[in-house]
Length: 114
Image (cartoon, rainbow, N blue to C red; front, side):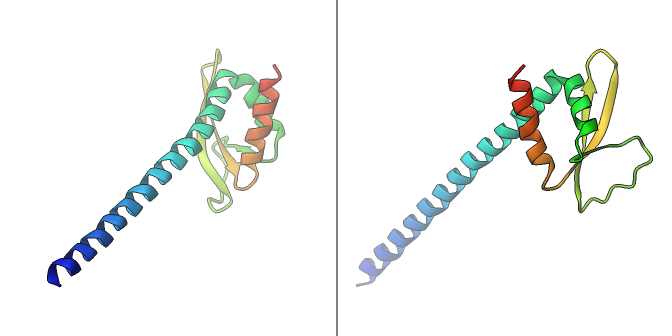
């Protein structure tokens, strides 16, 4: 009786370990896919930095920090930094939460048509 109870508990623990490992693997895959999507955007922004700079100047989803801004951190993500090719300038900017993600997709579409 004791041995059977022990094996039932052991079997339940093994199932729990498989569940934990499965959830961890799922989270890891989700994280890689999520981060890869962001990296692909930032790679395009670096590759086409001047186009991206002119793009974010026109978009309401981005705010370029000139050093005198008071940024509400509840409404904006960042700061993000981008080196502009050829000019030797690094810009610092923020993205409006809930809007800059859409703007990223818009920029990807613009650059993919070049």
